[in-house]
Image 1 (tube, helix red, strand yellow):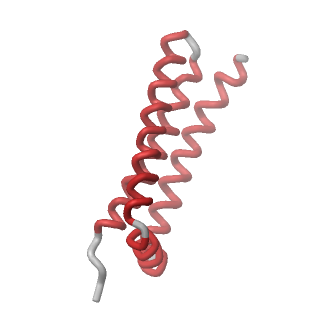
Image 2 (tube, rainbow, N blue to C red; image 1 turned 180 degrees about the vertical axis):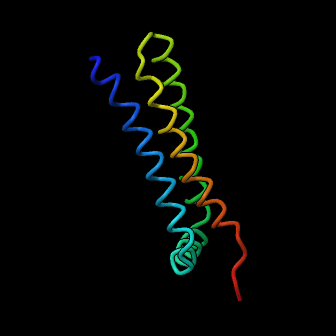
Length: 103
């Protein structure tokens, strides 16, 4: 169990960093941003619901992490980068969806 407590937080931090790097690189690609903007604006209600579900899941992951920390498990810290990566995805997609179309 000590190995899990030592490895899992670092894996979750790596997932957060990789998510941030991939989103940063992808958001620099104009064609990808245009495709995402078109797909997000094609079904705005569904995308709003999916974003709300992701935010609720991130809140749930944060609560779960706090619960694990309160119970005395050290790997409870691993849940915070996972929630951060979910929120980062929602923020980037919201920024893309709210941006005006280029004429």
